[in-house]
Length: 207
Image (spheres, rainbow, N blue to C red):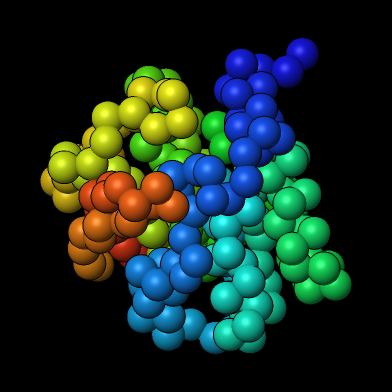
């Protein structure tokens, strides 16, 4: 049976074009700058969580990255991205899954999440996300969420706002913060949304 979360996002991507949703970016500059700052080889395994039909994958392919996965709960979102990329879509591993139900079959050097994590507003959802991330990230984690100066809702759903300290508190058992920055994202409707980006490095846990 289709979940309410999945139904919501399938409806969004079925009925709206990129210029009708707030999260659309023509150039995901902050995400690209952070990913490139890690200076990993182009063969590094990268996953974009909640990537939908984001253009991040387009730019990563253009930059020569060869091991890219995109996960989204919406099949329609992924289909839109595949159509846009055409033949290049065959170079990407597409994963249709709710992130809190994700059972990875590999680990990732870079786990990138812009505007997905902040939709997890319940403690059990965050715990599930954290467990998956801790077990399947080799090197770096990037979280882009609404800051304390950002919206309180998005796409008709409640979200969780974050500051640097609250994100660090969630992830600090297995990750140490590398950098943080805020960004005023200008939506297709010419409104502004304040995002917080935090990048983390996986730390070795002594057993």
